[in-house]
Length: 404
Image 1 (cartoon, rainbow, N blue to C red):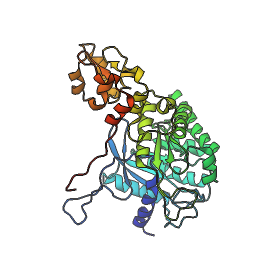
Image 2 (spheres, rainbow, N blue to C red):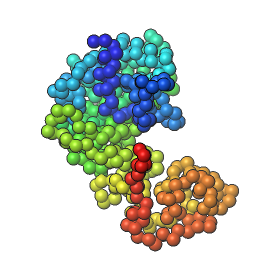
Image 3 (spheres, rainbow, N blue to C red):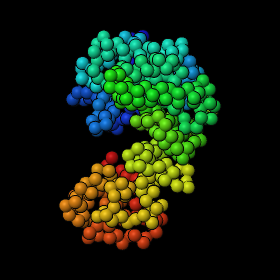
Image 4 (tube, one colour):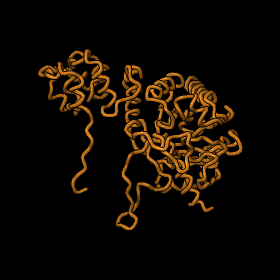
């Protein structure tokens, strides 16, 4: 098989891994038109750095051959998809060629399980080692680790990769046993613990070599089983707490051709994945707890975002006086983010915060208006029932233009 044909197969096989955040750019191509380039080239994905920069990564599998028969995976052993396999040297060559042409800033590499977990992990590590040591590659490398692999291989991977990840797969361990019988939740969490321990040891000893400086992440598939949002978010919260993960990614289950009856034939609403990401952001950045966001419910609301849902369920804490409240409480107001909250606190050291100041700070006043008090404004809606407010504040579906 030619290298370009392998790339077509293995780049497509990698698209189901959401651990690289997409930029969400529309698909554009110059094929048959004027101009040059395309946004949907094989193997190219977009990811955001912590400082907000968008970078392009070569995102591929080493191989989509796999010994495992995970029912939710298109590359499962019993699937009849086209198969291909790169050698480590081929992945290195592709990465360097793409990098030298300024197509990418780094590599995201995962793999199906071939021969054994240790053998597969050795191949992944070999790619990273060749790039770093033989070619002095300074770009970004993200490696997917194999949970059942020898911990020594995981530690070696962390010496070359900027970030490591191991997928938790499903939020409910009991479902994982049923849908992925070859995988064990204890081996997954043990690998997470190995990565966390090595990372902490590296940070504690300045003389120690850097270990996966970008930390570790994981992915949960949403909608492949009956797990509700409460199960998903409490699982994510425990992963952040126990293993200091940088990110938990959520991937809406996508039904696959000739899928077994053990998984759904219909995908979950994409809005559910979106709401989980919003809730996850509140867990990581705003100090919310999963129990706060969900209250007595088991599912996130699809028509309103999680912060607004929390505010409507806790009306006794509102309206908030922006000239007195702490930054943490201001950031919990719908329509006001962390940066705006900090700017409000800085502003009131100079003057009394007024309504126009919020407009200048570009707060989303359509959502914030019922929940704030300023020097010259108090909401008339503070006595309106939450159900009525919800009707006015819920997300409205975008209406398509008449002419497309």
